[in-house]
Image 1: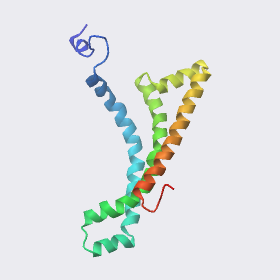
Image 2: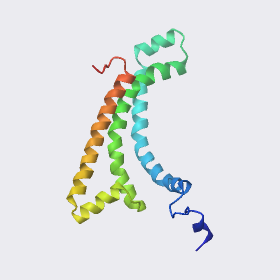
Image 3: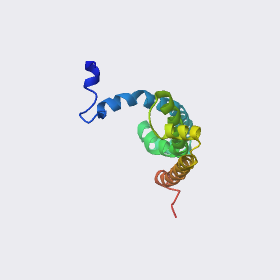
Image 4: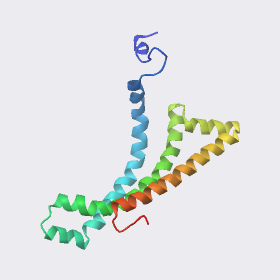
Length: 157
Protein backbone atom coordinates (compact mmCIF):
# COMPACT_ATOMS: atom_id res chain seq x y z
CA UNK A 1 0.00 0.00 0.00
CA UNK A 2 1.49 3.32 -1.06
CA UNK A 3 1.92 6.30 1.16
CA UNK A 4 -0.56 8.43 -0.88
CA UNK A 5 -3.41 6.00 -0.20
CA UNK A 6 -2.85 5.88 3.56
CA UNK A 7 -3.68 9.53 4.33
CA UNK A 8 -6.93 9.76 2.36
CA UNK A 9 -9.16 7.60 4.54
CA UNK A 10 -10.06 8.20 8.16
CA UNK A 11 -10.00 5.38 10.68
CA UNK A 12 -13.47 4.13 9.74
CA UNK A 13 -12.56 3.77 6.05
CA UNK A 14 -14.49 6.84 4.89
CA UNK A 15 -13.06 9.48 2.58
CA UNK A 16 -11.97 12.72 4.18
CA UNK A 17 -13.96 15.85 3.25
CA UNK A 18 -10.90 17.57 1.75
CA UNK A 19 -10.34 14.60 -0.55
CA UNK A 20 -14.00 14.57 -1.55
CA UNK A 21 -13.89 18.28 -2.37
CA UNK A 22 -10.79 17.77 -4.48
CA UNK A 23 -12.68 15.19 -6.54
CA UNK A 24 -15.64 17.55 -7.01
CA UNK A 25 -13.62 20.18 -8.89
CA UNK A 26 -13.66 18.72 -12.40
CA UNK A 27 -17.32 17.55 -12.44
CA UNK A 28 -18.40 20.87 -10.91
CA UNK A 29 -16.48 22.82 -13.55
CA UNK A 30 -18.06 20.77 -16.32
CA UNK A 31 -21.59 21.45 -15.03
CA UNK A 32 -20.74 25.14 -14.52
CA UNK A 33 -19.32 25.66 -18.00
CA UNK A 34 -22.32 24.02 -19.64
CA UNK A 35 -24.74 26.39 -17.91
CA UNK A 36 -22.60 29.55 -17.83
CA UNK A 37 -23.06 30.35 -21.53
CA UNK A 38 -26.83 30.83 -21.51
CA UNK A 39 -26.67 32.75 -18.21
CA UNK A 40 -24.17 35.31 -19.51
CA UNK A 41 -26.04 35.65 -22.80
CA UNK A 42 -29.33 36.42 -21.03
CA UNK A 43 -27.72 38.91 -18.63
CA UNK A 44 -25.97 40.71 -21.47
CA UNK A 45 -29.09 40.77 -23.65
CA UNK A 46 -31.22 42.03 -20.79
CA UNK A 47 -28.72 44.73 -19.86
CA UNK A 48 -28.44 45.93 -23.45
CA UNK A 49 -32.22 46.28 -23.61
CA UNK A 50 -32.50 47.96 -20.22
CA UNK A 51 -29.62 50.42 -20.67
CA UNK A 52 -31.47 51.99 -23.59
CA UNK A 53 -34.65 52.56 -21.57
CA UNK A 54 -35.95 55.99 -20.62
CA UNK A 55 -35.67 55.48 -16.86
CA UNK A 56 -31.94 54.74 -17.21
CA UNK A 57 -31.38 57.99 -19.10
CA UNK A 58 -33.42 59.79 -16.45
CA UNK A 59 -31.30 58.33 -13.64
CA UNK A 60 -28.12 59.36 -15.48
CA UNK A 61 -29.52 62.86 -16.07
CA UNK A 62 -30.19 63.19 -12.33
CA UNK A 63 -26.49 62.61 -11.71
CA UNK A 64 -26.37 58.95 -10.66
CA UNK A 65 -23.07 57.23 -11.35
CA UNK A 66 -22.87 54.69 -14.15
CA UNK A 67 -22.25 51.85 -11.68
CA UNK A 68 -25.30 52.82 -9.62
CA UNK A 69 -27.47 53.05 -12.72
CA UNK A 70 -26.35 49.64 -13.93
CA UNK A 71 -26.55 47.86 -10.57
CA UNK A 72 -29.63 49.48 -9.03
CA UNK A 73 -31.80 50.12 -12.05
CA UNK A 74 -30.87 48.15 -15.16
CA UNK A 75 -29.57 44.92 -13.63
CA UNK A 76 -32.62 44.50 -11.43
CA UNK A 77 -34.92 44.52 -14.45
CA UNK A 78 -32.52 42.41 -16.50
CA UNK A 79 -32.61 39.66 -13.85
CA UNK A 80 -36.20 38.67 -14.61
CA UNK A 81 -35.38 36.59 -17.73
CA UNK A 82 -32.30 35.23 -15.97
CA UNK A 83 -34.43 33.94 -13.08
CA UNK A 84 -36.54 32.06 -15.61
CA UNK A 85 -33.51 30.52 -17.27
CA UNK A 86 -31.78 29.60 -14.00
CA UNK A 87 -34.85 27.90 -12.59
CA UNK A 88 -35.34 26.07 -15.88
CA UNK A 89 -31.69 24.95 -15.88
CA UNK A 90 -31.73 23.40 -12.38
CA UNK A 91 -33.70 20.27 -13.42
CA UNK A 92 -31.57 20.10 -16.57
CA UNK A 93 -28.46 20.18 -14.40
CA UNK A 94 -29.85 17.10 -12.66
CA UNK A 95 -29.95 15.38 -16.05
CA UNK A 96 -26.39 16.58 -16.65
CA UNK A 97 -25.39 15.17 -13.27
CA UNK A 98 -26.65 11.77 -14.43
CA UNK A 99 -24.16 11.90 -17.30
CA UNK A 100 -21.40 13.23 -15.02
CA UNK A 101 -21.98 10.38 -12.58
CA UNK A 102 -21.68 7.87 -15.40
CA UNK A 103 -18.50 9.43 -16.80
CA UNK A 104 -16.77 9.74 -13.42
CA UNK A 105 -18.22 6.46 -12.05
CA UNK A 106 -19.73 8.14 -9.01
CA UNK A 107 -22.44 6.41 -7.04
CA UNK A 108 -25.46 8.66 -6.89
CA UNK A 109 -29.04 9.15 -7.97
CA UNK A 110 -28.10 9.30 -11.64
CA UNK A 111 -26.23 6.03 -11.53
CA UNK A 112 -29.12 4.50 -9.57
CA UNK A 113 -31.59 5.66 -12.23
CA UNK A 114 -29.49 4.32 -15.10
CA UNK A 115 -28.92 0.96 -13.43
CA UNK A 116 -32.63 0.74 -12.54
CA UNK A 117 -33.55 1.27 -16.18
CA UNK A 118 -31.15 -1.50 -17.17
CA UNK A 119 -32.59 -3.88 -14.55
CA UNK A 120 -36.24 -2.93 -15.20
CA UNK A 121 -36.69 -1.81 -11.60
CA UNK A 122 -39.90 0.15 -12.19
CA UNK A 123 -40.54 1.44 -8.65
CA UNK A 124 -37.13 3.14 -8.58
CA UNK A 125 -37.65 4.57 -12.08
CA UNK A 126 -41.06 5.97 -11.09
CA UNK A 127 -39.58 7.37 -7.87
CA UNK A 128 -36.81 9.13 -9.81
CA UNK A 129 -39.34 10.54 -12.29
CA UNK A 130 -41.47 11.77 -9.38
CA UNK A 131 -38.39 13.39 -7.82
CA UNK A 132 -37.64 15.21 -11.08
CA UNK A 133 -41.27 16.34 -11.42
CA UNK A 134 -41.31 17.71 -7.86
CA UNK A 135 -38.01 19.48 -8.53
CA UNK A 136 -39.46 21.15 -11.63
CA UNK A 137 -42.54 22.29 -9.70
CA UNK A 138 -40.41 23.56 -6.81
CA UNK A 139 -38.16 25.51 -9.20
CA UNK A 140 -41.21 27.10 -10.82
CA UNK A 141 -42.53 28.13 -7.40
CA UNK A 142 -39.16 29.62 -6.42
CA UNK A 143 -39.02 31.50 -9.73
CA UNK A 144 -42.46 33.02 -9.09
CA UNK A 145 -41.43 34.14 -5.61
CA UNK A 146 -38.18 35.61 -6.93
CA UNK A 147 -40.13 37.56 -9.57
CA UNK A 148 -42.01 39.29 -6.75
CA UNK A 149 -38.74 40.03 -4.93
CA UNK A 150 -36.95 41.49 -7.96
CA UNK A 151 -39.83 43.27 -9.69
CA UNK A 152 -42.02 45.50 -7.51
CA UNK A 153 -44.79 45.41 -10.12
CA UNK A 154 -45.38 41.70 -9.42
CA UNK A 155 -47.28 40.82 -6.26
CA UNK A 156 -47.87 37.44 -4.63
CA UNK A 157 -51.60 37.98 -4.08
